[in-house]
Image (cartoon, rainbow, N blue to C red):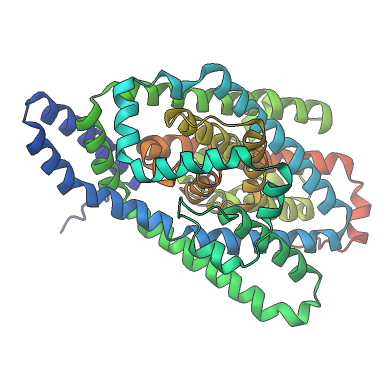
Length: 443
Ligand code: ASP
């Protein structure tokens, strides 16, 4: 019997998106009475919501496990010495540049502000409860002093913050406090005698893997979820939102292109002593793998082998920098998250104070450590950031339909960013030195 060819998930998501939009446009054209339309919308609604909830349920365990492990790894890095510290600083500086590019573009072009009043009304009604609470919180936030905000980030009871993390009426630290607790936990874990934390480390590694599996299940539902979300959106507001969405997509792609071709080229030319065009050409296999898998983790083996064999980066540096970098250095993701959060805030008319914008930048840089290197790894992190600045977490549903292409593109940046970091570190390291800090010559 001939085996039927399996359709790739991203193709299915694209089909889901088209089906949702086309069906929505058709139903809208039929001119049904509002009651019938509402009934149809109510029937379709659960499909989209179940998909979103599958993503939501991973947020707390994922943020916690990924941050604890990321920090614990950096703790190890410190022990191996200079390379670790250099990678950490490199990562922080280059991620900040990428977030800055993204935030500048989204502030200049303001894609979310081109939303028609009709669409904005729909969004605020659709997410009424969350929006009301969010604006209440925003009001409340205006009265808070910087001291209050900072104090709130330190949780009194981290479990309370976890339980009420998606509760828009909650005025405690919420997800930010959970992240803070994870950071402290990770730092403490890295400084405790290693023998004593073996089981704990294994536990977090296990937790991380299980959560990633659940994200995988959620991705399987994505084509249906996306179809349902876009169907309801198109039935309710027509296809006008799609133009706004297109503007947003183009802005993300432009930001990614600037970071890839300008920032990385400058680093390669001036800090790594490489010819950028040749470097990118030799990295083509890495770029193709990252683009087609949408996963930094899945691209790791290709990245290591190409770096060693074609880019001539010494094995110890390639192994070390690329492995840590695949989870802890994600420039494309940081750039994308900054644009997306501000775009959605614009869609919901949430005015962000300077303090909130600074929070977004800080969280996006932190997201470089807290985002899993798997397809859609950003989504739970974006929910986290949205909630912390008073935008309903469910708003993520608006961009989900177009996320795959953005995911493929930002993953390319994440991985080429790691390889660029490895070339930079190779350039400043004397080969004889890394032996002395305990890096193995063999993989
Ligand atoms: N897919 C990305 C990666 O693996 C993570 C993300 O931004 O969703 O690098």
